[in-house]
Image 1 (spheres, helix red, strand yellow):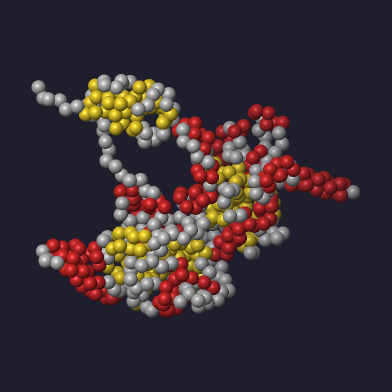
Image 2: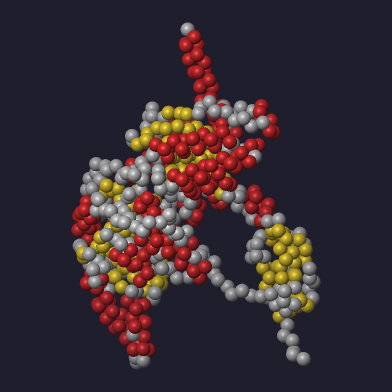
Length: 514
Length: 112
């Protein structure tokens, strides 16, 4: 009898807490097109897999009448569950409870699940929807953020960390997502900034809306803070679930293999790349014509589109793809594309994902803005990331590979394991036009017909050097292959590099040019 | 989010490529040589005090005005000897970054 009543008490206590911030607050949340924290967790995890912890946690703040306030579960839900069977640790801030503000106990719940994820070696997903620090809790709130950042850093490269921005995430709070591997944003819902529009207006007199300052589009297109953009929470959850299928649970294992099929024959790989190196094409078609099911999962689709990154599978195994995109800015390397590619390469390396690089690069983008924005420092990141990576590295040179761009894009010299080139490849110190202008400068200048001589010399240079065979004769290219042999070459290279092991000099850590 | 953009030309090392140009590239700020006769707000802020008048002679290094920004009082100094040709703001004005505050006309002295 006693047990029965105690169970009833438990049920009542639970039920009360499961209502979060109450009907009114929930209605407000819905009016903004947002789901509640609990609904989000349920939508993301396998049905019935969620196990919640710390439901009964309460704050013990006293100042500013806080002792008179009860905040259900202190405004955050934590627990573990599965996504397509993969274990995940998750927390979701509950905006209906004190605006999801972060107090000491709120932060302790988050750090508890973070510690759990690191210990049990499983991915961590954080759903951010918070007004920021709980000001009434003062320095305790700041301590909470610090403890979270510390754990983000400690876990970095050990377990995958995913941040989902489903509401405001402002001030110091933005630094947890910034320290994690992948940031998901949703149009009109996500807002991320260090200082909001009001402060900017007061201090600087500049007016801007929240959306234009730090909305989902801004972070997907301009800042590069977000990796995945979607137009609804539903779409966002589908993206997260798909990502989970491509990555391992921790850095001590490889990603699970998947049952897959041949690429769609509709992508005719022989017809994609125009012979003229100045004409554009969509390099994603090349990727889709080589990956299983033609299923390419692109990351940072709308940021620095001159380089394409993402996951695909070759024979069921996950691979990370990096490809210059001739359709956008001729596929040049610049500040943003270097930053984008380098970080992804390091991600793949940290999580045992082989890297496949498709090269069609004219070089670096010239410009005062690029130089002043630090293209030297940012460009160096690509060299660092490729050189540092010890996972299998496979390079396919599709067309242009000129100058510094050639070296940077996973060349043999940065210890790529397999370098293939298509017959259309032009591996040269620079494009024929530029090279002819320099090498034959005197002849062109002293000619009666400088333009005619220039054209002649360009053709001459093209014939001799705009091909893959000079590099192949030095062994910088391992094999010149037909485009239609690409998938077969990738399958084979991955199969034979399954047990790749290399020694690197002992060090505490390197100093990548951040 | 997919807008179809037209192909344009981009010159990389003397080769002209047909490609789409990014918004960032098209909207990049053109570089201009620094002009010591134009005193600009280097940060958004409030004009706290103007220390010179139009027509006044100033020497390189003289204080021209105090621009308060981020709770700091910044003294703007003249980059050259000259005459204050124009004061473009008044005390209390809130200015954004890059606004013309003062013009200093260079004077060429005849060496005595």
